Length: 54
Length: 310
Image 1 (cartoon, rainbow over the protein chains, first blue to last red):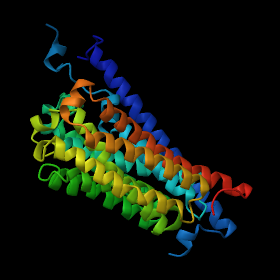
Image 2: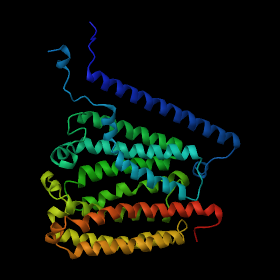
Image 3: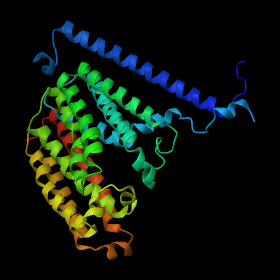
Image 4: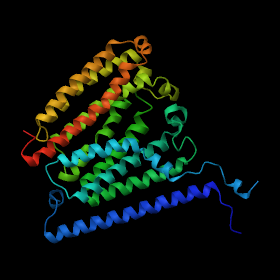
């Protein structure tokens, strides 16, 4: 039987889950943004000095 | 009694407790100094790459904070200042702190390597290793020089920021390191003078406990004098300029004056005025670091107008 009674602990768990969801969404956005920047750099044929020297 | 009480310890962690594990206040110093290191470097970095790089450096710093809280939970339980941290307070398990710290360490180093370059990623990994293994595990509980050597971990971020842009190390980045490295001991010893019995109760060999408070006052003066040449030398490098030089001269004169004041007092005098000189020195030490790095930023932002620099 599912627990129907609302409890303070559920609120805290919800906060934790929402927080983690937000962090993951931000991480995905960062990786996507980095990908766009790196690929557009490659297209323009310029790389940061640090990478070009590797 | 409801069924829920069987699982309710009233201690379940919220999201904020996990954020606390990452020591957000220490992180702010890491973010600021790493950002300055990155901005003043002679190689320009795409703003988005710079933003993510600083974020991952901060995350690496946070990861080492979580690992520190895992290892030091026993000391943290004893010291008043740290009793309310998530692990000693029982809101987060020590194993959870360890897991989070390890996972974030790997993630931050890998992502910094991918976003910037592998030298910067490896440097971040070394910094985490230095803070967690060399400082927290080996030195903190063994030697009163713990603060001196541990300070190196906090001094690496501007070097990592510099490495993000240039892919290497140079005189400028080593001097930025030296500035924070030499600043850390007087900063923390001033704190230890007025935070009194906490460290002795935890059995951490702080200088105030092992060598006495009078010796600590002398140590503060000696380290403040040894610190002074580094910011002046930094001001004379390619990232310095007149603004940095004037800032360095003024701030170090004031810092030495504060250290002299502390070294000439004894504890009776300090007790009498509620550790006024020690507290003022500690507060000023925060401004000291902020203004030195702020001056480097000013110098870099004047450069496009043909001003700043030598």
